[in-house]
Image (tube, rainbow over all chains, first blue to last red; front, side):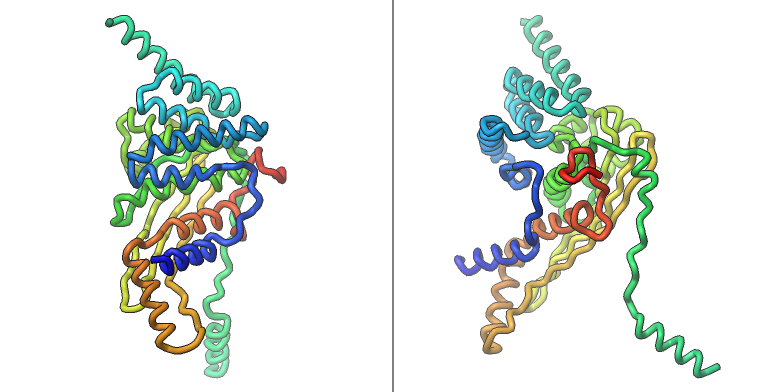
Length: 121
Length: 211
C-alpha cells in the first residue's frame, strides 16, 4: 500500500510537472471541488476549508481568487443559510466587477424568496 | 522518372510524421478581448458518467491563472440547473449569446470529452484523455479552439533484473486498474492548452505579465 502511494505520488509529480508562478493562492479549491463531485457529503468540508482559506487571505491582504467567495455563498445557499450566502455573494460582487450582474441577480432572488416566505407565515 | 519518384518517396519517409501545428489566428480573439469567461458543464462523449464533473473541477484554476475572471463553476452549474439545464450536451445547443447574457460573461468556454478511459493489458494499463476546447464570444463569434489528447502508460524503470521490472510494471498496472487516475492527465491537458503549450490562450487582463 505504501509503495502504491509513493508510485502514485511520483506519477503525479511527473505528470503535473513543475508548478508555474501563480497569481492566486487557491487553497486546494480544485481538489475540493473534485472531491465534492465524487462524494457530495464533502460539501460541508469544502465550505469549511474554503472559508478558512479566504479568511487567511483577507488577513494577509492577499486577493481572493475569482469565484471563490461566490462558491462559498452557493455552498451556504445549498444548506439553506440565506444570510451567509448573501454576505458571500456581496463579497464576490465588490471584489470582482465582472461578477456584478450575476451576483446582483442571485442576491435579488434570494431576498425575494425570503420576503415571500416571510409574507406567507 | 522512376528515380525522381523514389526521391520523392524517400523525402516523405524521411520527413515523416513531423506535422507542424497550424499557427492559430488570434484576430477574432483579440477583437473580442474577453475579460470574463463562463465555463459551462462539460459535453461528454466518453462512457464515464463522472468525467464531466471531474473535468469541470480542473478548469477554473488555469483559466484564472491566465488572467481572466472565471465565473464560479459550481455556482454557474447550479444556476443552469435551476433553468432546467443539467447536461453539457443540452447547454451546448443553447445560443452562446443567450448563455453569456444570462451571466453577464464576455465569452463562454465549451469543453468536450472525447475520451476518458483506461485500457487494461497484462502488465501495463494505458489511460487516455482527449478533449476539444471551444471558446465563443458574447456576439456568437468563435474566438479560440484547441484539442488535447494525452496518453499515459506507466513507465518501466530500467533498473536491474527483469523480475524487478516485471514486478514494478505489475504494481503500476494494479494501481491504474484499481483507480485509474485521470485527474493529472486532465490538468496537464488544460495546462498545455491554456498556459504552457506552444500557442496558449492569450493572456487576460489580470495576468501578471500584461498581454
